[in-house]
Length: 195
Image (tube, rainbow, N blue to C red):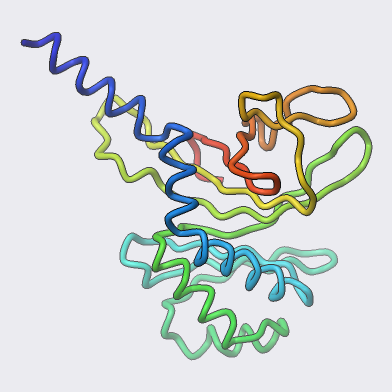
């Protein structure tokens, strides 16, 4: 009996963040996720920023705005008038920003950001959206997060879904996590830390 319970718990833990579940999550929410990516991409033309939801009720955010020399970190309730003023200050379109927050809330995304990485010696960047795994975690199991990454151009994989650096056939690692293919330009990575 105890063996069956342990096998059941192990199966839940193993398959909760499996590639199939993450890919299914992407395809089930593809329209909204692609819209978040496109909206965020248009918003960061003036100033690059990162948006984090601080709580599970999606009522508080952290906004990190990157300028040429500094990173400004702001904490807001989503209905605060000062949020609107801050968006205007940094030339971030408020209407599209509020739409971004609404779409992120709809798919239960925690954050959206950019990431710079290198292929050989060439600097590349991507946009990623982060999520908390929805599995009921037990006290001995660390929380898992998964990030869906949008690359600017199609990526090569090893035939098993692992993305490869085209120039060296070495797996692409972003923040020390291997990236797994969802489609030609979308991949995911799993982490036990909030990035």
